[in-house]
Every structure is written in structure tokens, then in C-alpha cells.
Image 1 (cartoon, helix red, strand yellow):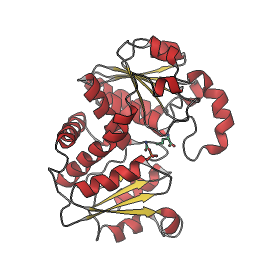
Image 2 (image 1 turned 120 degrees about the horizontal axis):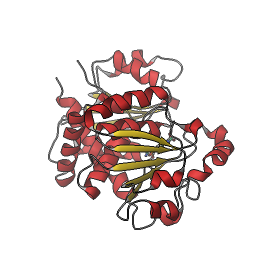
Image 3 (image 1 turned 90 degrees about the horizontal axis):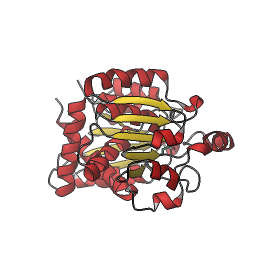
Image 4 (image 1 turned 90 degrees about the vertical axis):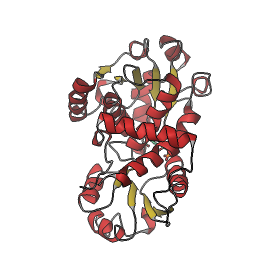
Length: 307
Ligand code: CP
Ligand code: NVA
């Protein structure tokens, strides 16, 4: 059966580790694998804006010997005139894989159910699993092992990034703390899924409403924009509700002295994070952005190898 990456827990702990190993080896020897030689084409579709995802998939597909086809939904038939499954039936006869950044997770599920080629979630309202592969790679590079570390996420725990940290973090055996007001806590079904994974990996997920308590002795401090794409109308309410969860030098001081700071970017400096932190000595955000390339190449190689 065709494998897809629609949410972080589509990968088992050993599959996630295998992809991260492959990413590290591709980072050391960037052009060593050419599974898309031909070139075969990969469709990369955007319903929402992007810099990192667009560039890293385009460059990564080319590195693997393939040809990226970047499609903007605004000038395609998807997103109104044609369903995701009909679109997939057209694409699958011509492309090796489909990468899609969209709003509803249900659209990705429909596309994956209706096609024979791998479908990759390049960010939905609910999850951002490609970002998490890059983040885990970054943590592994800077900290050695990932399992057993404490990662504290600050802000909108109900966002795609909050949900992905919960699922991918426990898959990697991490202790994930989500620091948010109760009304921005991750969805209950995502927490339940994460707890089932954590019982097997030794990880854990904890919801915390006191930001300094969440930061205490953490190994990794993480935040993301308070205003995800599609939530622009809620901007003022979100600034009011999430203000206490800004990552500042005080947050970093409560964490372990060797803690790192990561952020998927783009950052709203002065809102979810102060410039002193994102530009400070503990920040590894530029490594993290580069790692999108290596992680997604490894993901593509791995998916194309599956029977
Ligand atoms: N982090 C991330 O996905 O960035 P873009 O929105 O620029 O792709
Ligand atoms: N949570 C953010 C991530 C951007 C990469 C958003 O969805 O806009």
C-alpha cells in the first residue's frame, strides 16, 4: 500500500529514526542519491504562502535528480473547481509524488486515499510534519540523542506546530511540554494519540499554563507565530491571549544552561519571541531552516523506496 506523510504519527518511531539517519547522511553527501533521475517530476502545490517549504522542496527534488513542478492553487483547478481526489488521479499518471500545503486535513486525506503515489503534507491547519523532521534533525545535531530530552513549546498549542510537536516529539521519545492558556491547548484527540505513542517510547506530554514552570530545566525551547495562516482575523485577540507566553531572555534563563532555541519561521519578532533570543547564542533557527532540505530529501527517498 502506498505510504504517505499526512501527520507526524504516520511514521513509527523506528521509521522516523530511519529517515533522520538518512537525512544526516544526505547532509554529509548531498548528491549521493538520485531516485528521481530521469528526471521524474514531483508536484508541489501551495494553497498558502511559503518561502522555506517552496525552496527546500524545489531544491531537494532537483538534488535527487528530479524536476519540481510548483503549482499555486490560485491559478489551478484545485480549490473550488476540482476535488482533491480527481486532481490526484490526473497527477499520479505524470508525477512520482504529490506535496501539498493546504488548509483542511480532510483534503489531504481525500487526496491520499485516491492515489497511488505518496502524498506529503507540507503544512495543514492541523499538522506540519515536514517541519518536525527538520526540527528533530536539528535537535539531534546539537544535542546528540533526542530521546529523553525535554522540549517546551510556547504559544498556540492548538496550531499545526503545537500538534506536530506533541505527536512527533513523543514518537522520538521526548518529554513534550505545551505552555499555553487552556483555550489554546492541543486538541484532546491529538493528546490521546500522543499518550498512546508515549506509552511505547518512554516520552510524555504535559500541558502547562505557567510559562516559567514550562521552561524550567528544558533542553529545547520552541515557539511559533501566534497568528497562523488563516487566523489573521483573530490577530488582536491572540496577541492579548498569548502575550504571557512570549519567549524572552527570562524564559531562556529558566531552561537548562545548554538549552537551544528553535522556531519554524517566519518569526514575528517582538511578539512570540524577542530578537535577543532568536539572534542570541542559543538560537539554532538557521540550521533548522537549512535542515528542511535534508529532512525532506530523506523523506522523499524513504517514501519512494516503500513497496
Ligand atoms: N517553516 C515554514 O514552513 O516556512 P514557510 O512558510 O516559509 O514554508
Ligand atoms: N503555524 C504557522 C506555521 C508557518 C510555517 C502557520 O500555520 O502559519
